[in-house]
Length: 275
Image (cartoon, rainbow, N blue to C red; front, side, top):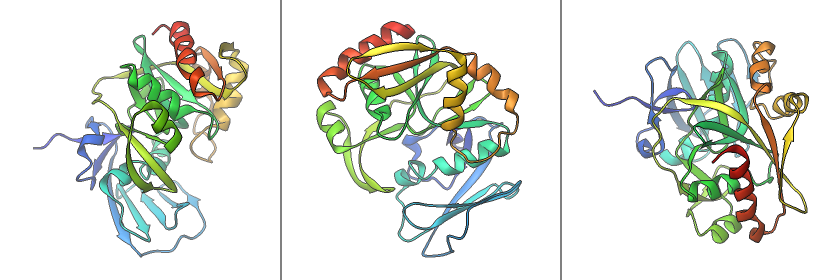
C-alpha cells in the first residue's frame, strides 16, 4: 500500500501529482479527499458550521468542506494544477479542519531552529516568506510558508514550498517561475522533505524598521497578536488553549526594507533564538 501523504496535519486523497510537496501522514490525522470541479457551483455567502463549511476564493469560485464525508470540493473557473491545489488552495481547508478538530491555525510560516519550531508571523508584505526563504537557503528546515496548524504545542508541516514575489526571487537568486497561482504570480522555492515530530518553541513577529533589531515581547503582547493572525474567523473552541502558546518566548524581528540588510537581520535572528 502506498505511503499516506498529507500536510497541515491532514491525510490527503486527490492530490495526485503533488507528492513531492507533501509529507508522510500519520493515520491519526483527519482524512480529506480533495476534488476539483471546473465551472460548477456558486460562491454564496461564507459559512462555517459544525460539520460543513462554504469558503469563497479570492480568485473566483469556492470550496465546500464536509467533515462527515471527509471531503473538500473546489468549484473553480479554471483547472488547478496539483502543485497549485496543495499550495495555496489547501490552506483554507486546513484552517477549517483544524477548527473542527480542536486545533489552532495562524497566518504564519515556521522554521526549525535549535531543535524546535519557531513560528514566523506578520502582516501581509511584512517579509515573512522572504525571511523564511533566506533561512532555507542557509540550510534550515522551513516547516510551513503561509499557514501554521498546531495541536497544543505540536506543529504540523505544510507543503514543501515557499512562494516568493519577483523581486525577492531575483535578489535571493532562488525560486522558479510558476506563473499565476492563486491571485498572483509566484516564484516557487522547493523545500527538502520533512519527516519528524515538531514542537513549537516560540514566536517571531516580522515588521519593518530603520535598523535590524530582535526585541523580546511580553506575553501580554503575544496574545493580542496571535488572535489577530488566526487563520479562521471563528470563536476559538477553547480559549485556554492560548495560555501555553502565549507562555512561549516571543520576539519581534525588525529590519529595513533594503535587501542589503536582510543577511544581517537573519544573523541577529539566529544568534538570538539559538540557531
